[in-house]
Image (cartoon, rainbow, N blue to C red; front, side, top):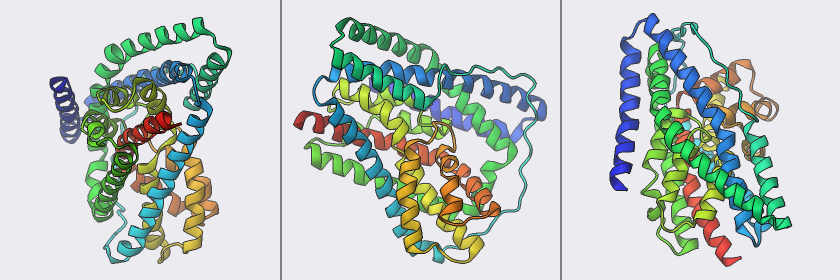
Length: 384
């Protein structure tokens, strides 16, 4: 098992390195091919995401039996509390450090990616949130009606989806990741990181601090060693860095959580797909820090404390419904960025730009944090 884990990490790291290296040296003709590969692989991956959610959430709810409604409410509340807590932590750090940092806005233009020579559209059978709600309802209906035959069919469907994850999704992920980083290297986004490097480093350190807090909290609450979960999350973290999507990383995250002996299988299959769509602590932390940066950079001051607190309360709600695609959190929350913080077009554009530069690290924090919350949920289920 350790050998498989090690091989996965090596493959993902090579995908990132090869992708960035190619992006710096390839010509436009090669880049057109890379964009086609990126587009088709992304279509396949995101087509499978609703199927994975249905295949894992519905049968796991059907198998939970007792206190499932209480467990759902606890999971939603836990995810919201983690996201809001991460945002409050970001505010505390931002108000102290941002005035001390030297940050400049880059006017350097990116190289436009060439138009794709071929585009294949594979729409998912439903969007992520529809799949999540349908899975919850099917699981609850199966449980309440004691439909044992349906429960058995759901278990078989889960086994089928698991085979698709192993034989289709995971082999495609390195290709998708390499193509993504190739595009970033070609257009110059990687190079622009240097302009916001100080604040990006602060944000990444905050990610690690928050993850440490979550795993320590999970260890104290469960009486188990959180490292027994965290040590398996290397492949999921690296996959999230490349996909920039918790949903696209779902297959790998399920495998990583499944290697832990302190999380029960039924809780893993219930919690990990659900948390992938509602627990966005890293993305919320990142956006909160960056709205402070943009406010300081463009408007000469940090937001008022009462204003930023209102923004955080609302952001936690919006994050629950953010689509499982790159940049989902900031896109879902643009309304409150404008309405609550008063950002103009320049402010929202800059926020989206710098958020996109390190979106992958926020996503990796989201995914890795799911493991800590799954351990808490596992203990709550046993105590309920």
